Amino acid sequence: MVTIDDYDAACADLLQQLVDRQLISTCEETGALAPTLRSIYLKAVWDKGAIALGRCGDGDLALIDGLVSDKMLSYCGKLFAPDEAAYLDYMFNDASFPNSQGLRNRYDHAHTPIADPGAASIRTDYYRMLTLLVAITLKINDELSSSTGRGYLENFVDWPYYDESVLGLFKTYCKEA
Image (cartoon, rainbow, N blue to C red):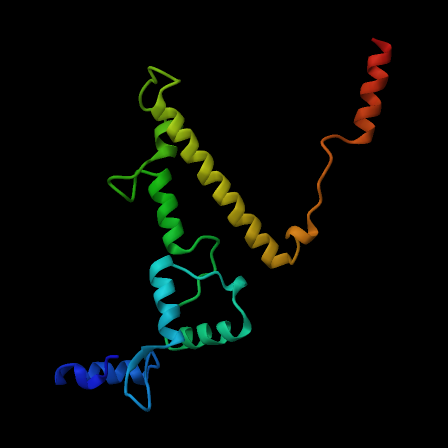
């Protein structure tokens, strides 16, 4: 249990600003400092880089709207949040990061001949690229599902591998051959 009095007097004004901004609260009986939901959301954005609003309830959205109106957070209307875009840039391109993976540049431009196409490094790059493409596909699917209200598991349609007309054509072809 830490109180404002436990800090140096120079910190009292800063702590009072946090209380005024509703980022920490003080217990009326003990004076103990505690984080508020606003600060918990700020920490979540700090840790994860973004919050998916589609999964938040109405109370949470109102709290986030308050943080946005106080200019502590901002909305991003793009498919990828800035941290996600930076990560994809790190994985695909050589331009922004000196130590990037540069998967697209390495294989798209074919800078050097590949001595051993079965090398472990190529296999590792393949799995990284495949993982990234699946993640991008899931992100696009999530955005389409949330904007259209369709595409979730309750709307899932297990499409057949072939159409009945194709099967009939195949049977006719087999009889003639």
